[in-house]
Length: 143
Image (cartoon, rainbow, N blue to C red; front, side):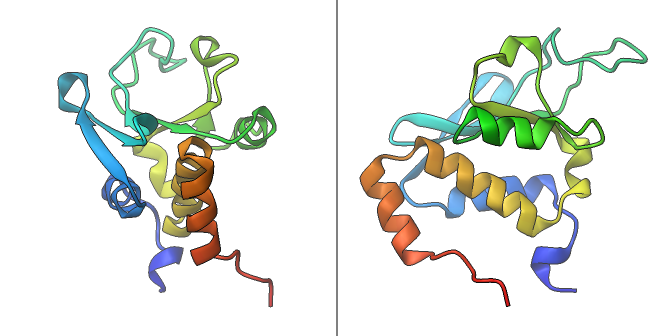
């Protein structure tokens, strides 16, 4: 099975974020990394918070990862399907990001996760850096 087709893992988030250019990593609270480009976060591992809880148990999710998105339309495309691993909370209303539980990353392929990480980076990188990256990585044309 090609690597892009296998189920995504938490390690892939770290690897993919670090593979983007000009990335710095900041130690977030509780030692959870924050990936930044040009001083702007694009992916981070969130601490348990009261807005992201298991609807059955009321327990806070301990494994939430935040990814920036380019637009509200992109956000809605990812979160509108309730069966999707992506979600949002009232705390993130108006914030251009989506959440996913690390325990549900395997519902995505590594290739799909790569697209999410790349879009997150592109949404936060400077126009010059984004244009340079896009020029070096043209979109694949359908066969």
